[in-house]
Image 1 (cartoon, rainbow, N blue to C red):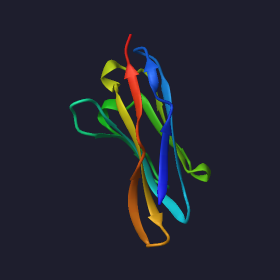
Image 2 (image 1 turned 90 degrees about the vertical axis):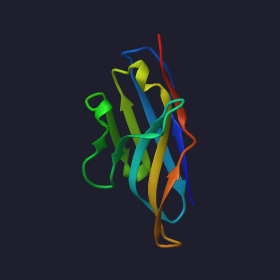
Image 3 (image 1 turned 120 degrees about the vertical axis):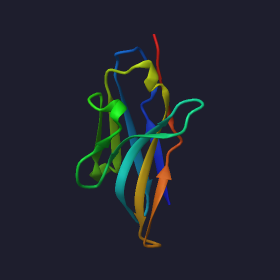
Image 4 (image 1 turned 45 degrees about the vertical axis):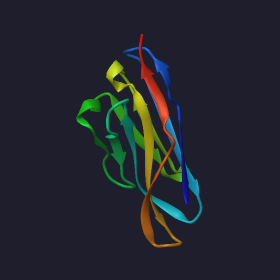
Length: 121
């Protein structure tokens, strides 16, 4: 199994910045793609950004130019740098890790518990 833990959420004023981090840990696995999703109250979870093990990142239109996803493969860590935050960015942000499990030879998606981001003055 793979454990996924997010950190870095909090309260920020409009126009401010936050950096989220997510670490995947476990044994006998390798990571394919990692990504960030968010869910605001009363809405469905939506994709924010994803980044494969190799290749270009992909972003939702509503964060392009404001958010940047990056990863450190050696640390099994993915980051989300969020700039120019607006109140509409308020949500619980979840990290997703698509991992290949050596024990089964299958790929599965693992999720963190989420971290709250609140943008308010």
